[in-house]
Amino acid sequence: MAKKMFRFVGLVLVLATILTACAQSTPAPTQPPQIVEVTKIVAGTPVTVMQTQQVVVTATAVPTVNPYDEKSAIKVMADTTRAPAVDLFIKAHPEDKDLIQYMTDDRSVFLNKLLLYNNVGSGWMDVIFTETNILRQANTVQYDNYMADLTPWVDPAIVKQFYPGSLAPCITPDGKLICLRNDIAPEVLYYNEKNMKDWGYTVPTTWEEFYGLAQKVAKDHPGTIMASINNWIPEKLYFVGSECPLMNPVSATTYYINFLDSKCQRMAKMLDDLQKLGVLDRNGAFAAETGKQFTQGHWLTWVGPAWEADFILKGVFLDPTNKDFAGIVGMAPMVKWADQKQIFTGSGGGAAWGMSRHTKNPKLAAALITFVTTDPSVTSVAVTLSAYQPGGDAWAKTVTARNPLIAADPNPYTTLNQMAGSLWSEFLEGPPVADAPIAPFASDIMAGKKTWVDASKDIQAALVDNATKAGYQVVTTKP
Image (cartoon, rainbow, N blue to C red):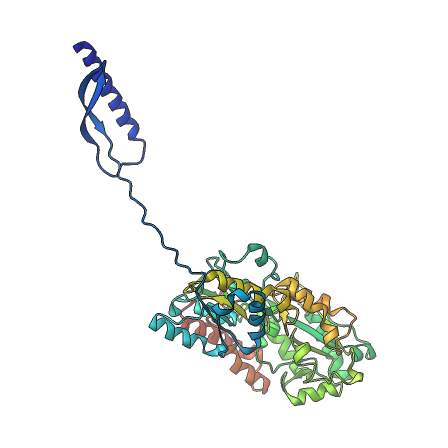
């Protein structure tokens, strides 16, 4: 019996050694090994041996509490123009009627209100409608990173159906989707169908052709305008489409800005040359004097956002009830430089819907955002071009039906869809914006006090200073 016990103890020690050696290849235990007494039954007799034993302490997970509440009400802040879209959502989802609190505040006060709510730690809007550059600003440390990531809450298949480049302002450097675009406003080359035909001209497709045509117009039809130098967004009308790095983010903390780049300078020179020819309007897109130019037929082309067909050319510039103006406005793709591989354009307007990271009901908030940006009941009656391609497609098909000024040939539907997919996504504003530092120089240029080329160094300095004061680093050579 003693011999059997000795063999067993030896076997146990060998096994213990092997087990210990094996354990060295596994992750370290949470506590050091311990020597313990183990009682074994050998041939019916209790035997006590000493054995090395690993003691592993496993932490018990604390039960997680769901931070969301699908019965929690949401506050929606948007302008009155967007109220019908929210009403359509409530009509489609009557069960959520009592959960939606609508605030028709002017979106210019959003950031100030956000600072107040951050200070008191409550009161945040769950859903907000405003410009993308403001939403990007709200997503900074200054505003306690207010924006929520919509990625977990919006079907990826829906996101993919937005026009190419339209959601670029909604995507942060780390890949978060902080908004869905409501509408976009790509630039369009409008032209006078009658004058173009009567004067024997061809619609230009490049800036080089545009300048050649301007020279003919200045000589043969003096006083005729072809575009406007007086606009609130000259950078989006002309420079962005030229791929000018006015405000191009390269990281979450750095912008690439170089107004002295050759792609900016050739556009600056082009505008200066056009102004010398006298074909650029100086009164502006909302001026009665410009309207007279159109009424009297003293215009050949016009550069403006897609919405100007319905809200400037129609009513402000031309009377849609006047049969002499029926079908007079042609819509062509924006011109590009001959060496550009494709047309690019800025977006002269358009805003987006975003969600607060503080919301207790992200499911409902995201459902509303998705509905008001993509549902046919909203996009079919929208007053602007939807950023959601199926909605924009339907909107573009109805342009001639709602606007008798628009020529049916060439098909404006084709033009609008092409331009909607031509937004240059490298230009992204917010928090710093290009308009503020450029506007004073544009006013002096319009008044003939300066030229774009002469003001370029000062514009570059103003753009850099603007971004730096907003807390960003600036690089002036392409990364």
